[in-house]
Amino acid sequence: MFLSKYFLPIVKNTPKDAQVVSHRLMIRSGMIKQDAAGIYSWLPLGLKVLKKISSIIIEEQDNSGAHEMLMPTIQSADLWKESGRYDDYGLEMLRIKDRHERDILFGPTNEEMITDIFRANVKSYRSLPLNLYQIQWKFRDEIRPRFGIMRGREFLMKDGYSFDVDKEKSFEAYNKMFISYLKIFNKLGLTAIPMQADTGPIGGDKSHEFIILAETGESKVFCDKKWKNLDINIEKISYDENLQKIVDKYTSLYAATDEKHDPSLINKNDLLETRGIEVGHIFHFGTKYSEAMGAKVVLPDGNLKPVFMGSYGIGVSRLVGAIIESSHDEAGIKWPKEVSPFDVAVVNLSVGNEKCDNIANKIYNTLKSSGKDVLYDDTNESAGSKLASMDLIGIPYQVIVGSRLAKEDKYEIKNRLTGEINIVSFEQLLEFVV
Ligand code: 5CA
Image 1 (cartoon, helix red, strand yellow):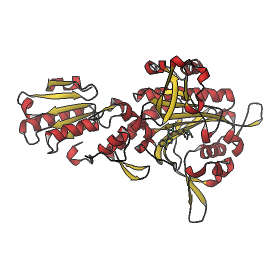
Image 2: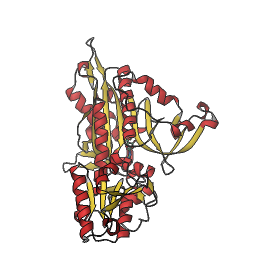
Image 3: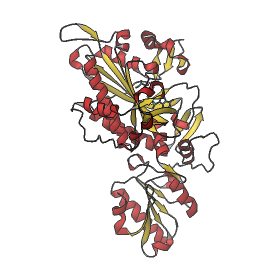
Image 4: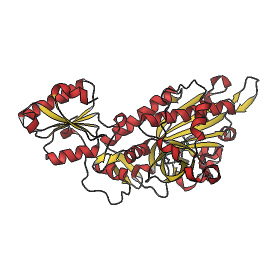
């Protein structure tokens, strides 16, 4: 991609209302633009990151045996009246009337709709277990939208729903998602701590929030100090194993959200009281919705029973902010390779200088043909401004071509994550950009 032809509106001034670093950096690097309180447009650079995060989630959810689908953002109020949540949900629900004066709403979550889809299509225990998920925009009329996309009103969520024949199987589905979430956050380069959590308006008897420790986080959290240095080593675990043992391992070390914290359960000297960002939340609620809405299956003994359910959420758009909160410096964002909007940037500091143009073009073409997604700064900005913008947008590798080194057929490769700079010749390109 040639920067001269791209849409990357870098903002020089830090927006006044942006209190946290991820919000400031997302605005300045042209990833998002605010349209109304808690409502944002995702500009090309931001959308690329959102899509990368989504594809990591999709890959791992599919590995776990869940199936992706897509439900509408707009829902009929009738379903919510059936479950009893239409009145309970309160002011956070955006309620709308259509032209026929019918009550509709912009979905804040989808338990009712998925239960309706299930009851219309599944009649027998033989179709179970089943896990369906989507990545779709949600709307919650938050009283205090803040921190940019971290607490938005419109936000992108992965929401999944499991259906099982009994409580035991339903807990197995819960464990699968527990492990799948640890794998997803690991792949995103994050350490997310599973913490005992409150179930809030979703309801149910068992719940964990996945929290990234960060001073700027909205949630007050309590955990064992050992979590700080714990390596969550989960990649090789297969979904076919007995997952209870592994879930027990990660839940035996104390970690609880503010609502669930019980000081009698942990030695004061081991306790870390800090703040965190909730990037995922899983719930087991058994038959709460299936009973209210008549989602039943025929069991092997011929009896008809409400299906057991759980729901599993990840804040996809919030994750973009959470990753920046945990990976940045004074100059800007430092994207982990897996989610970076581009794999590598080529910066030609002397556009028009024949030698520089030749080297930069050759590097660009070589990287492209080796399958890399490359951003090529071919603009006429000053060298200082180009380098500052590159540090700001945080692509992990910068290949910098300047006139002095170009005379010797050399150029610089800067690793944005480590800060390491190497002066290399053309042949060494793919050794450094991996
Ligand atoms: N139905 C369940 C699970 S599918 C549910 O709605 N869970 S939730 O309310 O906990 O939301 C799931 C995730 O969405 C949260 O863990 C959080 O990461 C994200 N989220 C919730 N509210 C917002 C918001 N206002 N802005 C950005 N992300 C949010």
